[in-house]
Image (cartoon, rainbow, N blue to C red; front, side, top):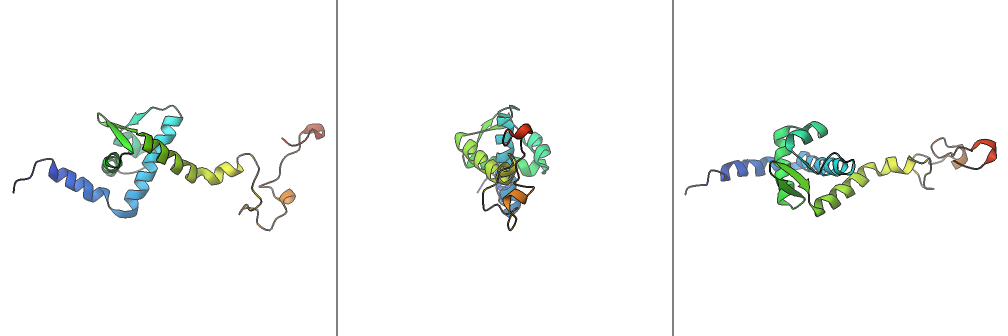
Length: 141
């Protein structure tokens, strides 16, 4: 049986792309990075080279993961670049929010009552949760 010349490289990409946790982490990082780039106005489309520098991963490995994400419908090919599809935007946003949820809780100096950072400490005595008083007793900032 004769194989098409493109079938061999695609088979190699598929086997490398499915190599366990590193592949899953890389795909998560790609979706998060592309979501962040889009949100910050750095562009809609990128390639493996740019992403590999941003997420500190091997360029060939990133290229393989881009193919997997495109095959799953999360990315749309745009020449040699990729852009997030609607499902990629959703998944990238969800992963980004999950990754930074802990930082977002403390950004304004307010925590929920069950904050793991403040367990066993009175809220008014916790430097993590304490709010600052405005000058001349004008209330909290």
